[in-house]
Amino acid sequence: MTPEQWEKLLAVIDGQVLDPLPVGFVIDSPWLPGWAGITALDYYSSEQMWFEANLKAVKQFPDAIFLPGFWSEFGMCTEPSAFGAKCSWDKTELPYADKIIADIQALGSLSKPDPEKDGLLPFVLKRLQHYQGRIEQEGHSIKFAVSRGPLNIASFLAGTTEFLMAVRTDPDQVHKLLATITDFTIDWLKLQARDFPSIDGILILDDIVGFLGEDDFKETALPYLKSIFESFEANVKFFHNDAGGLVCAPYLAQIGVNLFNFSFQHTLGEMKELTNNAVTLLGNIPTREILAAGTPEDIRNSVKAAIEPVSDKSRIVLSCGGGMPPDVPTQNIEAFLSAAGRQ
Image (cartoon, rainbow, N blue to C red; front, top):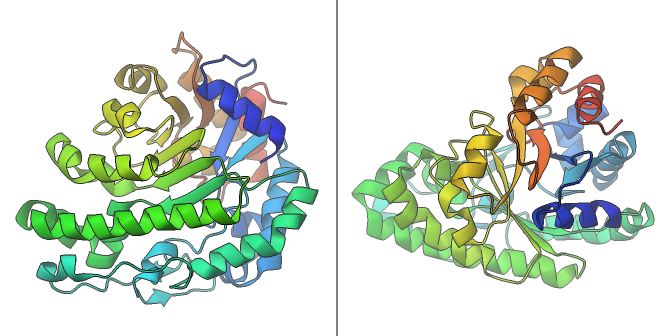
């Protein structure tokens, strides 16, 4: 992210209304390799190809803010690998982390990993260290410490269905597991911030939050997310949940979140009301149906439909309702930027 983009993001979070409204997208391995013409396995295994794909995107679309920017990641395998999950790799598909907990009664028995030594995490850091100079030469900085959220990590370690059932059937074991994962996540974020002093933001991604009812959310998710977002001082505290976002939206400010990327199924107006306009919203047109599969005209119409009903244009970064999906072509991103008045 460039200094100018960072200042625009801070201005929007502060409540300033920019004209035109900024455009931002969460981009990572579901979209970047295919768009850049390489395989997913090339993207993960070659630091140079990873860097060149990200550089190509920021050069092709200088008017878009890409979040978190030069994201060093190994898909959903990143954090689960530190706990010992087996990671399966495919040439063109996203990698998958196998669950490691067969007995729900053993949820609370996992030991906390060391993010400086365990799993793929040292490789995440080394990739950034090796290319930090090149990133900065291109006018960008490493601004975010990033991690999957505690419920997301838990669902990989125990299985999504098994974990969600255990929230009700074995709450004590679930809390033990989430406490361990939360402590690990805080260690992981602080390690990133230690190694890269330019970091001034936290990004947590946790779609499993959207599968909880309100009581379960308040009991099982809110305290752990709050601990994570309060783990160190940062000007941007960014939460991504593109499953159901209605359950968490009223509590985001209490958690410490000031930037939220949510499902396209919820309107900007609806989210403004639920968050009491205290949280900057990153959204909100459909991802696969419109941004990936639609025509440029579909995208222009969708951007217009998303923003026109909103009278208060403060705390909005125009985007799609989730991360950039696979197969979004260049012309569709250009159509989005055009519709937002960025071109």
